[in-house]
Image (cartoon, rainbow over all chains, first blue to last red; front, top):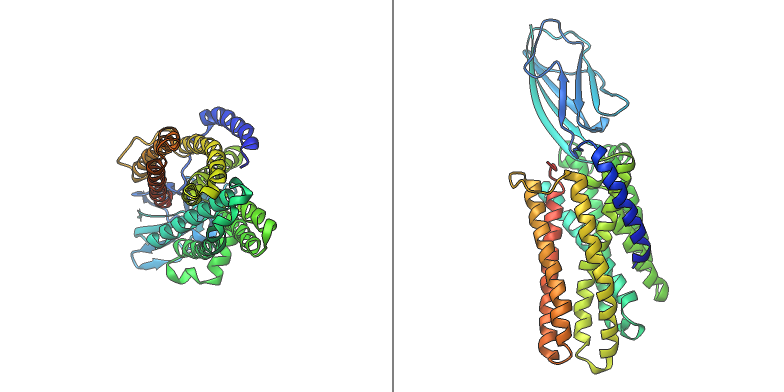
Length: 125
Length: 292
């Protein structure tokens, strides 16, 4: 129906795509956990004051979070914040964590609406 | 919850494509004299499709809230629904989509020539706004815009192709009737011309979409996303083959063996419709998977 006007658009789009594809980094539609502090499997000597999770893409603050379980049960971190890029989530730990092993179960919603979950663990000495 | 979301997506895509095809074919491709033969499709069927679109659009949003939150309770939680609408790209895109659905519902309430135009414009809006969500929305900036634009063109061209097949079947029936034969022939010729463009555009935009999401062809059967995408591409190529056979092998036979050629055309078209439905079902599923 709108074919006459779609063709130039298409041609322009294809040319642009050809240029951009070589420059673009791989994109993930789902937010994957790229790195975390303290890192998975790490043993830290000083109790961390903050948990930092970095995702492969922008996440929604309202629908992204963690449950932290320690040697004496669940620990509730403070209010989470996101960095400007929307990919790094910081959760302050108001009281120092007692020594022991901790597990972190995280869930993240990428801004395009896909949910991902995962777990990791670290030890405080 | 995942199954319900996939079903919702299937109904949404299928109904949006069909209502667009009906609006385009019955309202504009068919000559004036043939238009009243599509009364059921443009009337009751389109009204039902619009209802399906509206219900599944709301359902999709609620299921997304349940998925984003902590289960079914969040599907009806005002807090979660509001946060999803305001804080996510999905939610913002969905508000636009719901607005387009509202335009469609209002447009179908009009009469005569206004309704013909309203049905076409509103169904284009509904279908195109579906390109704002999903994997097309995973990139920002220029490439994100390009991806969304390409996804919209893909939805419109493939929707035109598959959606027109149902009114095409009705049109083929009219070829038997001497009084409408000339008009049906005109409609078939017009659809054939536009159909070539739609099929070509669907294939090109599909290839570009694959490139934008995966950066390569879906050759790894170990990835559910790539496996289903590869099956989808295979089925689309079979559909394109059927369309070519219909156009270049069966249609010329209408001149000397009309009854058999007509039956073959009807079968070929019905085959394309069935394959088209499977393709829409596949994309409804794998587009929710992680595209790795």
